[in-house]
Image 1 (tube, rainbow, N blue to C red):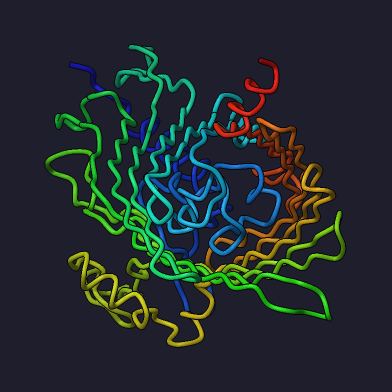
Image 2: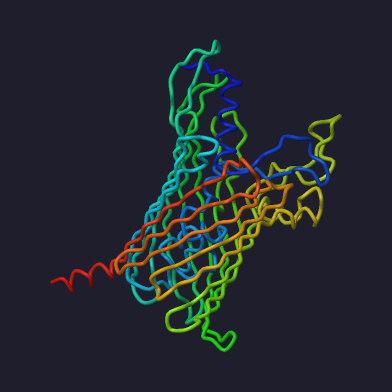
Length: 397
């Protein structure tokens, strides 16, 4: 049995949560117009895993289908070109804050027929090495916390322009390695969740040019609460609603440009304002200790600051993408979160190269605040197209 130094453990877990969420949290009293950020467990599920979306301000629900559609909108797979493919992405995360946090993503899809596609993915987050000590500060052991999510999805084309998808997710979070805290054994957190998404695309004309409109909607991580011990109150995972639109304009035979915008809102309770005299008495807002279905419905009107605060809970992601001859891409974007809800604001940029059988992408993040934990964040992604690989082998033969 390991007796943990409670203060050190608490600080370590707080640092892990801050690192994963990528937010600059300020600890202050809740007040109208002040900081009132929504907090969830396993926030790594909301981090953009791929370089393409990462270079476009974390926008991806309505962009053209690609191998990384699993995270943003699985229903896009129904429109994807090709019969199958795999992709892998890697990011050394938050190196300005912690030197050994990494996020890796593996995904793939297989077309069943002209209307149906299945897909799967693995999102893995390694939180580096965390020292565990006894009550005297003596090192007992070093543990490497880790979290992962395994997904499986089915996407179907309903008409020439509309598709839908349902996805299932298993989530595992091991932050303490079964250590004891206050005489109580901790355990890995486990949750089961699902996504329901839809996608619409249609060829249109913009500025006398051929173009394509895309509209996407994804309700993701709709699932059970998570706890790290039998005595701990269960917490919400980041249930989320993302909606967006995109427009791709073919400038000429070799050049095209895309613009996209995502709106994102967490579907979990907003922390209420409690009475200083009676800590259990809520002055403004709603009781956050509710069931999952109630929390989703309540999340649209439970902010103590009313409608204005509800609007502050929406994050905005906007991006632009330029392709030359479908072989070379340049990307840029901007992400905005209200100061009262986390204050993440950053520009992004990146590029992509497509050479027959594979596509290589990378992105770079530039926060507006100096010395921000997200500064200099890089992502690298590599995707393989099975059809292109087969054609390349046949041409060699």
